[in-house]
Image (tube, rainbow, N blue to C red; front, side):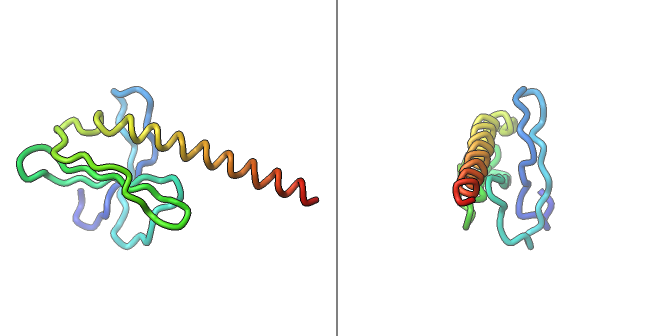
Length: 109
């Protein structure tokens, strides 16, 4: 990772495992993650492999999502299922929230 980055914002997690996870470098000056977005951070593990962490943007804060200590060099394959599931759940929650807001708006009018 570049020294100026706080991590990589996950843009897209393709379903096929042979396609790369699309990320965007995020500078350390970014205050917090938008809702449903995941930030990955990785660094060389002391013994071998990579220490990988993921943070999830929630409505009012960021939360620790997962840690993969000493993950092997092919760690993107290891983290892909978690990232894919969480992005899907966040998308579903955003749609459900929008539907509820619309229903409330229609009920008030």
